[in-house]
Image (cartoon, rainbow, N blue to C red; front, side, top):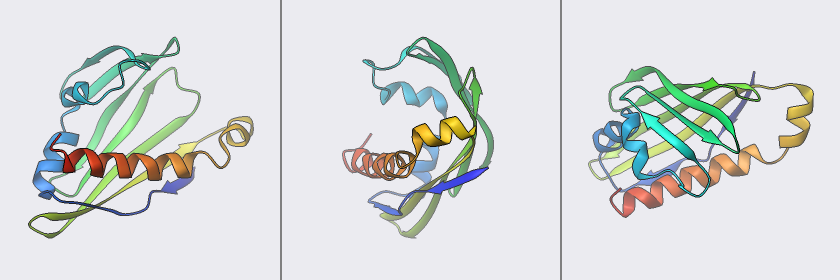
Length: 136
């Protein structure tokens, strides 16, 4: 498996608040881009959706309260992956977060995504931090 780790971002919020959002996949309906994702359905620990006609989703595998949520990709995905949200509260209103992606990809998929996953992961971390600063 290939590992990608985002840069660490600072979020002006309690780790508990961030954890509570990411450990309940039904809350993701608040943030999904409706112009790119169709048929979003979710329970607390699993969500499914369609992107460009491909059914896929996420399932929570493991949680450590206020510090980590681990997801697994489900559905007809082009590659297998595990995804972590890692949190560390530094002060009451300063939580550091980073995202980790472990992906098992074919050589062809690796070539297609080469140089794109790392910037995408960094951008996602920044967008999450910005979203929490706007009080998701």
